[in-house]
Image (cartoon, rainbow, N blue to C red):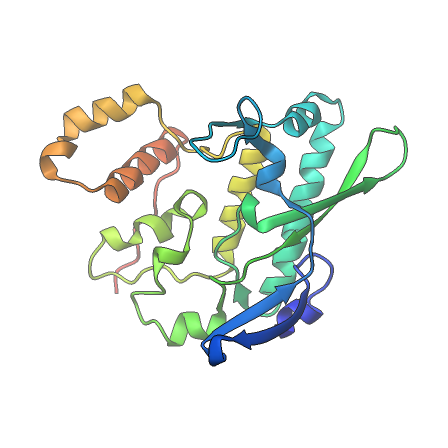
Length: 245
């Protein structure tokens, strides 16, 4: 709470907290900081629907932004503000660990000529996965904190694949973790898809056949990580091998 009270203008603003259900639940109250970057970038195909399956596509906001001659300035400004938010967090030796469009809220306001130009004020929210430097190095040992609270698509390779090398220490979740995630968000804003490292259906079918994934009985999460690894490799990104003890 102290971090969110004092860390500057690019973090979600904490208001108060209170307990309910006889003290068994703690509720935190924050200010309304606008719409998430995810909701700005994507919309349901065919318009909003209540219930049922929704197929997301790039939103009219994203398409208009990318078609404008100065649209790249909007992207760069959002990235700049994301980095300012992370700088405020990292200055207090805290790693957010879940930087993604859903956790970046933006409010738009007019900012001069041309008249259509809208400037955003961005804030980083949701510190449920955050970790301070002392805890990362002294409370978790070589295993590190649980990966259950991270979003795989935005996590760095060493965090996603580090557990594949038994007996070697997992890379600590420190500030470079957030910088990687910010880079993925940047790529997503440029590409207009949350599947920055996605491989096509043909590649997935070939991997299934050649590696015998079905015969090995790999679960959905393991297959997801394997396809993510292949997507990274197509961009010449390879998970670093942890250093030996």
